[in-house]
Image (cartoon, rainbow, N blue to C red):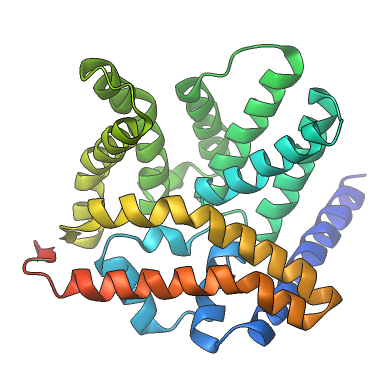
Length: 282
């Protein structure tokens, strides 16, 4: 029975990875080489096609997290699927169950890195809360996800991705809420600024410890690029799906994502030219 379980598991992993490779080919056919590499990293978690110059540009400007499938990507997929299924007439339980399966499949296809595991576990708890009529608490969900991940791989506690992923969540759920309450933030724009500031404060020592440098303008860049990330994800997924049916349709759907990636490169280039854009602490 145990061997049978592992055979099924290996078949599932191989199948999902093969699906990811097929979708990567569609992106290669529909986009220029540079943008295709970045899009594959953002949508499919495949970083092999990213050029070193592009990778360094994103890292030096503090937006390298966009190149890794993370909680932002999983949330866009999961919550988008849940809302779409709910509006299509399915009840919350059925929509949550199908969206949960979609998230698990996407996480497997993206390689189930630390941040992806954390996001999948937490989003499944969101769906569970919807099904049983309970409220969702971000900090409790993050702690539960942390326990599950560390139970499997305890040494991940010292991994930069683990620390940054959970640091950002705790920043949003604790310090971000405190800032919002302390400054009596009512507008969504001010709340976004305060939450972004809390993430920068919490992750600052982690970034310094692992990378020995800090992008000074990363806060402002993130404030500009993160809201556009959902459009990149939607364009990427729509382009892949339509590209299987008819390649020109896939290219048309990917156009929005292509121009946003070009905007990202332009913003990074301009920010990199500003004085003191990257502080090297050694």
